[in-house]
Amino acid sequence: MFRRNLSTLVCFLVLFLTISNTYGNEEMKSLELQMVSVLKDLRSAQDDASRRSSSEALLTLLREAVNTEGCFNYPFEEVKGMGILMSSDRKLKLFNWNVPLEDQTHEYHCLILHRPEKKSDLTNIYELHQTRPFFDASTSKYLSDDYWYGALYYDIITHEERNSTSYTLLGWIGKDQLTTMKVIDVLQFTKRGIRFGAPIFKSDKGTDKRFFMEYSNEVNVSLKYHSEDERIVFDHLSPRARGLEGNMAFYGPDFTYDAFVLEKGKWLYQRDVYITAGKSKDDRPFFNPGNR
Image 1: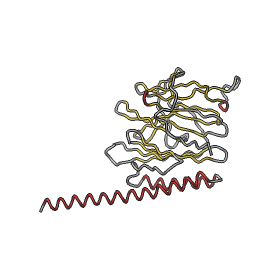
Image 2: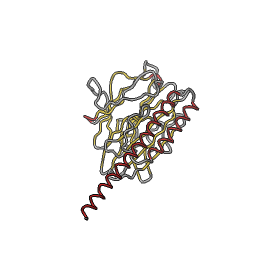
Image 3: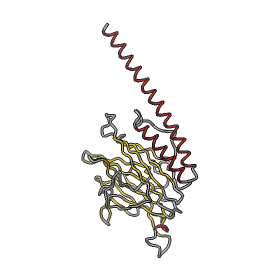
Image 4: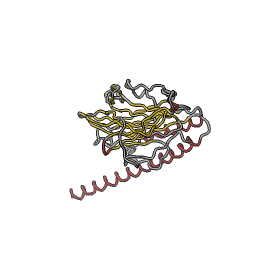
């Protein structure tokens, strides 16, 4: 009798979990399809007011999604035109998008989901919103969720050091009518919340907490992580002609490459590195919101 009752209980629990998971997936699928529709509206909008309205609608859907069971591991494969990134340790997930404006500046939004313990479903949620023109290219400050420069992140590099985990982020910033930027930054989680920046970028000029590149809107610049040798490789930038030094609207690749190499938890700058032809295996398709 006991075995029969136990078997019945197990079958009931399996059936209950199956129904719950199916319902959760259906709910996430519905939210995903709504996000697809809103993103299409955002990208096709003809004025700033319509773009901001679509962005608010997207934020509402995402707030509902991140508070729905199963969101952390849901793939969102149908969603295009925004960044959805998962760290390699599967403890960090980012939802990141921009609002391109008529003056060719951008507003940025990011929802960060963090699971401190992999075996726990406890998820901390943070919101980042940058609705002002790009305002701070400081490489010496720590930044937080309420003081963020705004970017579209397209890669996460996970590294552990002395029982703590930090995440190096690669990002794109559509600054203004003349220049574009890319950034390498570090995201850490503290008792007070999230913190951007860490004094781990070492060069002959000193130590910085993050790294920016600024260049002409007319050129494309590469900034990619190569996992096989643990380095971030990027175009070396130079002015188009003599006399233009310091005017970043005239800077672009000079067909040489520099890198940050990870050694003992620090990113060490190396000038004029050699790279092989072809794409790194870590290349990911990146939607450049400036091409609209």
